[in-house]
Each structure stands twice: as structure tokens, then as C-alpha cells.
Amino acid sequence: QVQLVESGGGLVQAGGSLRLSCAASGRTFSSYAMGWFRQAPGKEREFVVAISWSGGRTYYADSVKGRFTISRDNAKNTVYLQMNSLKPEDTAVYYCAADGGLINLRAGSAYYWGQGTQVTVSS
Image 1 (tube, rainbow, N blue to C red):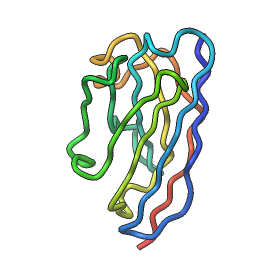
Image 2 (tube, rainbow, N blue to C red):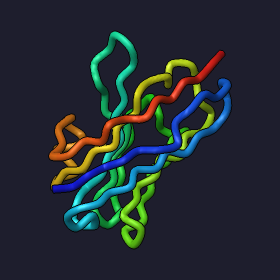
Image 3 (cartoon, one colour):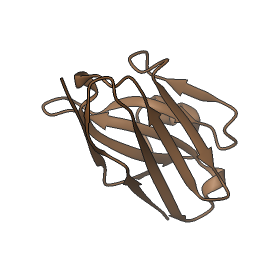
């Protein structure tokens, strides 16, 4: 079992930045691919970005390429999402997820999910 706890969400003006963190506990963090998803009000949850267990491979949704950066620190059991040049359409609840396969995350599935953290971008 893996427990995921997100933090770092909040209210920011358009053009601003936030860094989300996801702390993992439980089974071996470094063996899992990690990802971030988001769900805006009235919309389905969507894939944002994923990173392999080693950090060597990453995949980004087109909507965030060049603005968001995922990273992980396996020594700290933590994955990060640096979000720059935020737009109002980035407003959503952001969820951290873990899975044994990077491709599964890209497809929208995961073994484990966090509770989510709200990100609100004002115009």
C-alpha cells in the first residue's frame, strides 16, 4: 500500500507560479512511476504529466508543455510539480498518482491516488 499526500496548492494570479509536492509513504516509492492529474469543475479528470521510477523519462500533456516540470527525489519519497506561467484554465484539483507502469499513467489509470490539492488561477 502507498499513501500519497499532496501539498502546495493555493490561489495565484495568472502568470504566476506554484510548486506542488506529493509525499509518499508505504511501499518502496522508487519502484513506482508517478504522475499528476487534474480535474476542473464539471470536467473529467485529465492527465497532466508522468515520470518514470528513475526520473529518466517524462511525459507531458500538450497543454502544459514548456510551463510545467515534474521531478522526483527518491531519497525523500517525494515528487514535485513546478507550475510556471499559470493560466486560469489550469484551475483544478490536482491529484498525485502512483503506478507500476509509466504507460498506465499516460492512459489515465493508477494503483494509488492522493486526495488532491486545489489550484486556483485568477485572471
